[in-house]
Amino acid sequence: MNHEQSARAQLFHQLHAGSKPLVLPNAWDAASARVIETSGAKAVATSSAAMAWALGYPDGEQLPLDELLAACRRIVEVTSVPVSVDIEGGFGVDAEDTGGLVGALMQLGVVGINIEDGKDPVTGQLTSAKPLAQRLACIRAVAEHRVVPLFINARTDTYLTAGLAGEARFNETLERALAYVKAGANGIFVPGLADAAEIKRLAAALPVPLNVYVGYPGAPDVQTLQALGVRRISLGCGTMQAVLAHLASITEQALVQGRFDIMGEHMLTVSQANGLFAAVSPGVRRTA
Image (cartoon, helix red, strand yellow):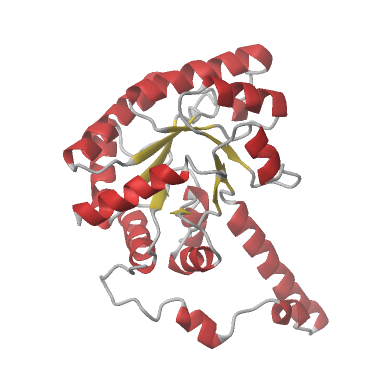
């Protein structure tokens, strides 16, 4: 298992250094993961928000860990590509709790982790960088103990937090990013970063791949982001938001107009849907 998992983890690292940025349309369950894979994705990453919504919970570490692990197990089992999991702020009260969660995910076959600093739920201000740095160090130790080159993507919410702007925001972002890299991060994720000049400047200043978020209307295309130095592009919960909006349109047309055209325009056949899982046995991971 470790040999196969290590090979998949190494491939995931390589995908961040390819001729083009790694584009990750994020999944939330086994079906979405398989659709993403069969559409040509080289890896699958989960969206914490989308996964929580799919299971009936709000975003923000409200999803019980047993349900998170069960959902991730199904995603890993039905895919043959590297799988990375968004664990929000790391769950639990300290770095040891996060290390335990990451160990459990790695046991399932996960080869990448996304973890964030985020905002204090009481004050709404950006949390200190120190707790995430401690969690990153613990995650790295867990991965080294398992002899698997886990790809750790560290997210900072400096561009999503009120009170930070301009040069002060950029400097805070870079300072945190470098601290997270020192603690063990292999990549840096900065959702909300959209200014072309700042993207280019930050990408050039980082010793690891820069990840940006494009799950919003009007996001720049891959070619533009590549020219700015971006190496990883996440669609995030935008994938599920779009799917839910499409479902709402199908439902409204059926209930209000008594018509089913929107549903009929783009749908898999039953055979195609069953084919997504035809080669999967319970508890056995799909092989390429």
